[in-house]
Image 1: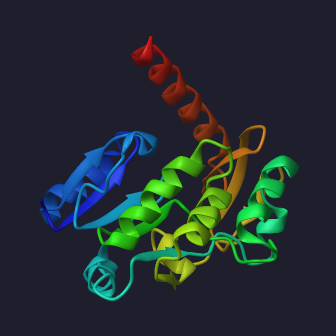
Image 2: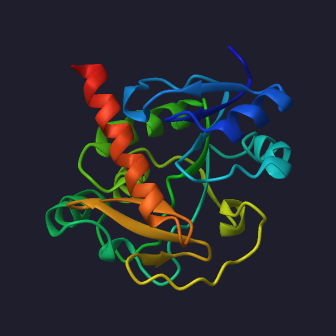
Length: 213
């Protein structure tokens, strides 16, 4: 088994090219189809997120100590503000008080340790309910892996803060906005890319339904 690898859900040209340059293994597969962590140290990258290439060596080293690394998704909201009421009630049964920070699932480093593997399996089980951030929280409380919160600047392509104000979407952290794709579901993208993100998501789902047909 390879020690380091990156997992994405669709073909992202820049990520593919950088992985080739760095000699990193790359797996393109829908996360809910991954039953076991494919590498010893895994980086799961969501749509429109640029991996912090210059920080990867530090991140891999941190995984010697921690099972999971992830940044916070929101600074002004808690889990109690996420998802639909029904899912929040289900989350309360697992997590208790939802006045807790929310981790962003578009950038997750996970070690193939016992706790890391169990966390990933729990996350996949919980993912089908709608909000991935609440799924992460429930999996975290079920398994209790060692989780390190990394800076939100790890999400930025140039590690800087963007202040663009976008009306149709909700601001998420310093450089992302949240765009609704259905009841209790959303994707995140950079300000100004909402229409492109939705079009890409619809195309991806259409192709996925075609493949399953």
